[in-house]
Image (cartoon, rainbow, N blue to C red):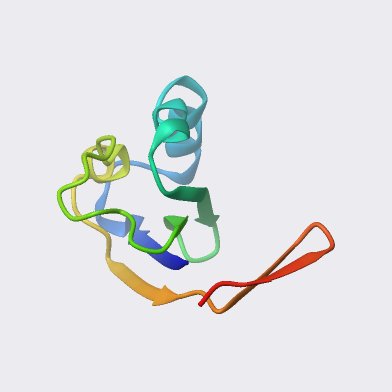
Length: 103
């Protein structure tokens, strides 16, 4: 599995954590439910740091090169790409009382 975490510093944006959360209630979530290879997508907020972010867990080999993904609404709404974006391999997952080696 592969993890991707992206954070936006909202200091230069007109968007706020509250406005972005409101957006999730009206759009931006359901289109991710059918993305091949996406195990989990989490939207994150850090109010003390004034940051908005997301974390995605992907099956090995996903997203495939050239794979169509839903629009990145956070980038569109915030007005710029993530301030920080990191990718790394997942070695082990513990979920609901079970453990799975991922590599």
